[in-house]
Image (cartoon, rainbow, N blue to C red):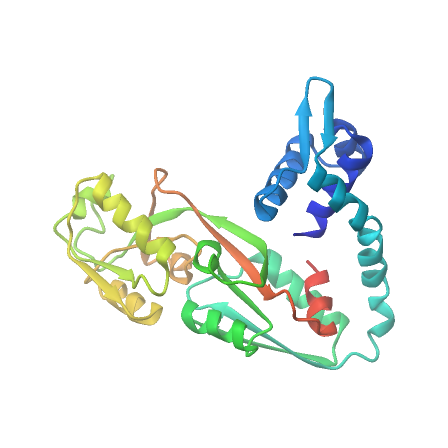
Amino acid sequence: MTLLQLKCFLAVSQAMNFTRAAVSLYITQSHLSKQIAALERELGVRLFQRNSHGVCLTREGAFLAQRLQGIPEQVEAAVAALPSLEEHMRGVVRLGVLDHQVLGELPTRQLQAFTSRYPQVQLLQERQDSIRLRDGLQSGAYDIITLVQEDMEHMPGVSFRKLSCCPVALILHKSHPMFGRPELKPEDLAQHPFALLDYSLSPALFDRAMHLFRGRRMAPPVLKMPSYSALALQVETGLSATIMDTNATFCTDQTFRTIPLPDVPPVQHVMAWRTDNRRTEVAALLAMG
């Protein structure tokens, strides 16, 4: 449950009208409806009963509304009090970044703002594969990690914030024999090997690639790579093409050709943290978003 979802739920429970609730929060009605729907999916219950006269709370919705009153204000008050801690805050925040991911402008600005505001807090960052990131978050080795959302679906007790939604593309290096072919399509490479991150590293990307191959009736040789560095080397030498999201670090290199695949669902990158991590330094960094 996010703070925005909580605000949306309480606003509708008070106004009993989606339009008026959206206006009070300065958001669109469609955005508010999406937040309510996501909250209902997470909780597994209906919170509102829609009818021709508007909306009313279900039994579960009324129960929740009674107990959540005032919580958004408490959260905002706690966040507002953070500046008074600036001079005294110490410690370390450990950030694990997915090894093939370009962080992008938004999280970069967030990290820069945090280190500027809290210079006594040490921010330690390192790149790792998704397995080590998931294990590290669960063990406490990392306070925050970045990951593909679908690759963390079975991690209990974890909250996340969306960072970027990235298209999936066919990628090959200029040394690949098919690099210069005009209007190149995946099926043109049906007899050429593809290097893919092993399923254990990214079920989301592996499944998308295999679904693409089946949909286009392809059966290319598939090399399951044990790491992103191994995959990058295989592609950089022109020995294989790959299917990756366009947030991969080598997509910024002009020696690679990136061909978007609009029929493949995009990949959602997120920032994730353990819900029970109550450290003030971590809360301060998350509040910068």
